[in-house]
Image 1: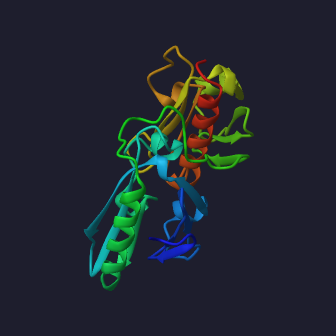
Image 2: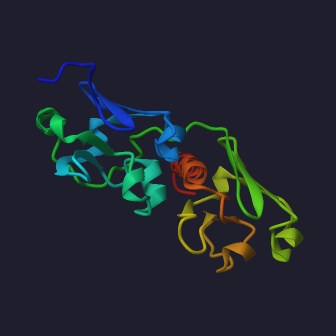
Length: 237
């Protein structure tokens, strides 16, 4: 049986096992994905995990992967499947010589998990802490836990956004968020309010647009997750 406080250290992260959760601590190192550095550490309750696998990785490594339950983690909900494999916070990459040890912990974890791939009714993993802010291509986004604010940049914002002026959105008026990774074409963060806005994010005063170096994953995704968690906490808008 794993003892409380047992630690399995891999590249970029270490998992500490508890009777009801796994504490994931991410390294600060220069090679560590920036998203991991931004997350720092996260406590994942076992009820938020649907399953655990161990697979061969690249170049003499093995990968221990916890599968989050749908709806359990605001970060993964906001990411909506857009994270690159190397930035998946639920993957622990280990040297191949730790395979036996990893297998042991996988079996121990599986024994503690309830076979449950039903979507969680509420978020079980804590959201990133506020306040948060980041620079998008056309404006600065900030969130204090109750209100999202967009302040437009004259260099990047469309005339539609200039006309609308700087925006503030109380969480109580929002129904969700839409995050499109800055690593794809037309990346953006859009606040959802029930009624559809303009199709183009650059014309929508409830959206900020990403661009090269603007709205990077490690800044915009934790922001989106924190807003989404605040919206869900309030219940149906």
